Length: 111
Image (cartoon, rainbow, N blue to C red):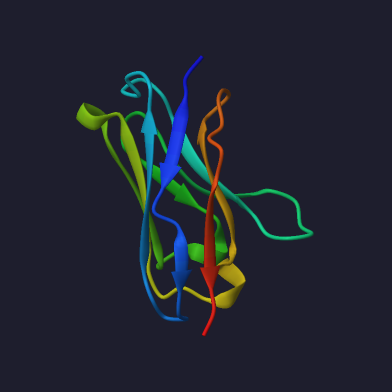
């Protein structure tokens, strides 16, 4: 089973930026990877996905602000988050599509 470890969360002011990282215990070269988030009292929702070939998809609410990328040599997936809004506050989870989940990292956007 693939183990995923997220990092990079924290407290940031509205309009700020954060970069989340997700390191996998095995090579991710052949996997599609994704980021999800869960805000307090809400269901977990899809944020972004990157396929093994590099193509990407995003939920409409983050398009133009978030960028998902991957470094297969480092077994790492990133989520660059710019122009953050309070409504982006959530626990962000890394996912091997169809497989493992990370433990999550908290992102709080507040002044």
